[in-house]
Image (cartoon, rainbow, N blue to C red; front, side):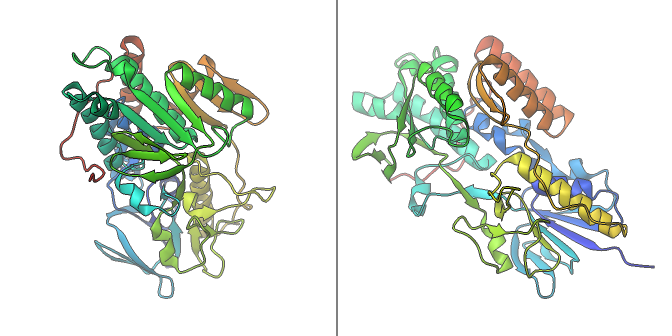
Length: 422
């Protein structure tokens, strides 16, 4: 009897999870490796960071998601080495292999553009730990401001800087503004949170570079309406525990949130192949790594070209479609069938939310903005959440927040690791 091929998937994000599900019940042994025991819906992390949602609302155990597939095993551990010569993957929980096919979907981390020391002063919402730390720092700053006797220190504590004018920065700045203007407005006796300064700093001359100009202009107008100060064409020069230097001006701030760019997570470097400046691997039309038979790289760790020769964006929908494609391709190979045609991305639209009743949606040929785009944004994100329980919880939280302007996840967690301060 022919032995079933062994497929090892590193990472249970959008790409890795889609790949594992597409391989479910195929004639193959599948091992999914991740250092966390849950799948995380990263696009909504900023809402955890700004107290709109709780961590459990956007995370679901990997074993619960994949438990119905008897051929899929899950290993909790961190990958420490990949030996492509003998086809073994070393992890903190032991060695896995040999594999017949290896799928690397390790995702991305924030890039600080050659200034790794800035990470100590500005977190980006890329993990639950990051989101909880941002929430703790943000809420603690208002608590300290309420007791501050020095007006200058009070102003610093009530100043929030968001670096980066892409979707993450725009959504974060809008959410922080709504937190201060509405949810916290009546909570304090000695300060008025509505007077908080929220600054969105972008080095480029416009927001949302991947969106049409009309949608970027609308986003800037809505942010300004919320009280966010948008600073364009102003790159960050330095970051310290006291604030940021922008255009030669020192801006004192207690909370700095990073959302200015990403790079591939370091795990993909273990393949020992050339990487681009963002740490990504260039893959072929079938998402395979050249000169490494049986190895595929997906999502934010890969440079994948579209039919025009342009790199695909680092979006969840790209990663999910790539994972589904590879899963179906490997399942077809295991069944002795013809592999599908080269991967082709089908754009479902690009979106960003600015605030209450305000969002933008780019479908390529046509665009949406305002209340309808906001409603569609909510529907899409609810649909993409994994698990009925998570969808129900998020809908309940959003409906309550919409009706009352409240945010129920305003917990300061002393154990949350925060950026180091001088």
